[in-house]
Length: 321
Figure 1 (cartoon, helix red, strand yellow):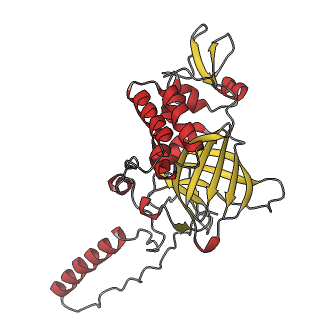
Figure 2 (tube, one colour):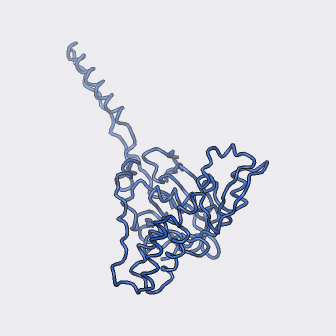
């Protein structure tokens, strides 16, 4: 559910000054009263609860990012895995990202490479995002020439991907003015799926059953995030937020706690209905990696923007303890 609301606090009442029979005193009193009223008028902005107050966007930019993972030390993996790691890193350095992906995935499939998992997942996540968000060749992509009547929206629906991905991957300058004959490279019917772990506070994104990227998230305090199967129902960029009292807080207002993106979830299968839950950004990155929300899944703004670009509506989401 949306995070706790911003509560308004009552302001103290105003008190006027006593009248005096002397003209000078009256004048001084009126000036003083005017000053008091002006100060109080300028201060009549809503006060927020300290525990749920949103941090301005610039504060989020100042928050330190997680330290990069380091490769395993010598002797922590068998020789075959070490050779795979060397091949993966060499391919990545040579800008052979498909080769790097193949070798990194091979490492993750081995049962004797746990020491390398964090490093490999970090590198593989970066490789995968670069592959899908640029015009690079991938087996999962198809080349397409624009025809009369085409639109980016229609192409996204036809290929089961997002408009944002087509635009970004093909560097489309103006999505409303595509030209007949222009060639696009499109990720065709990608099988993205999301798995959220409440205990690990992470979100695992897979593509066609294979590892794609892992993100650190925040989940609900006291187990408030529901478990079960869901799907992404709606996606809203720069979302407004409705407080518990029904007031709408627009995007950009410092009271809006949803960050830069919102993706609502709807229950599927035998999961009981759950209204008001979703995946969203946050202005408070220090709350990630822990159970910190009122039930929603929160992400760093840059991460939720990336996920928003990657996954279309209808993407399955599984939440586990």
